[in-house]
Image 1 (spheres, rainbow, N blue to C red):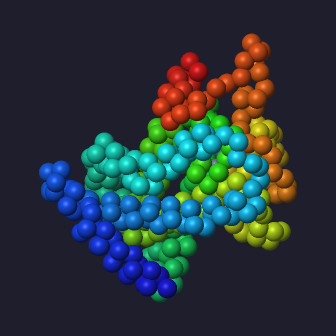
Image 2 (spheres, rainbow, N blue to C red):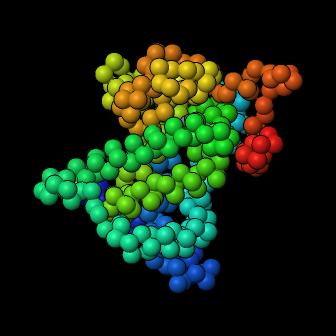
Length: 324
Ligand SMILES: [Zn+2]
Ligand SMILES: [Zn+2]
């Protein structure tokens, strides 16, 4: 199954590269970058497949069992823009030109110091290096890292000033997953890439893990009244589970049994929330957003997180600087 998938993926990547990307790269005079462009084509293909699944599968599900009616289409259009920027690779290409030299330098230093040669899937030869077992191991480990990052985004005031942009969507849909501050994305991606390198995830496996994670995240943000049932809810994060994380007064502000506020920080697996007692399995579908958007402060004002891409990004920087 995994071989069949990766063979077909490789064929499609080759075709897309030869017919679209390669001619473009040469036309722009970037022939020296052709190898990187081939890798980028893999990500572009993943994004195209994801968008096809969103439109063909998750979209109809949203129309079948919506949690709430669509009243703010402009807010949804902004989220679509975020999704296209990310999944079609614009963000990645920008990251590549800006940060790759820095990453190469850092990883070079790590390797010189004896790091980065370890492969987690080598620990039990014959078992952990079976492709699908290795895939599961990396998926679980990286999901735990994502959980910790997400706890940090809510725990530290400066990080929340960026992550709150993600939570400010009051009209949540399958497009909302990529609605993040770009600085937050850079930080999160940097942590994930470094951990992936340290535990030795191969590039092909890394693409597969990220693609799978993103698709699941899109489903979890959908305007979809679906829960996975008593057992399913404890195995995989559902739209109900993640919506509760976005719910006003529950996901960020509430005081759970955990020492920190908030519930349902998990990305794929609800196990970390169960382990650290931050899970909430109540069958409820509340309005999403942040309390300060709806409840006026002492001066009688509610906070505006912006409605367009640039105003949201700019306001995020202002909050970070303590002026928003
Ligand atoms: Zn959050
Ligand atoms: Zn979310």
